[in-house]
Image (cartoon, rainbow, N blue to C red; front, side, top):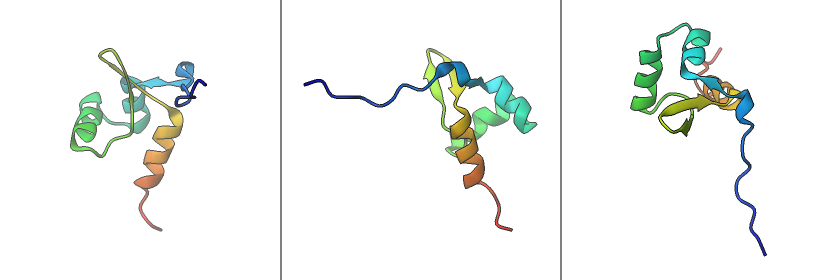
Length: 68
């Protein structure tokens, strides 16, 4: 019997690190720095490139929201 692995994300909906930086209004280096420190959004590595799923970015933003 074949086991199911994790669901494969729809890679057509991913955004690049440049697009993420533009949306956040920060530099690409700032995104790299946040990820290096362990407080950036989850990413998918494809070769040397990073791709970000919109739902991972939304989740990360929600986790970093300051209380009202």
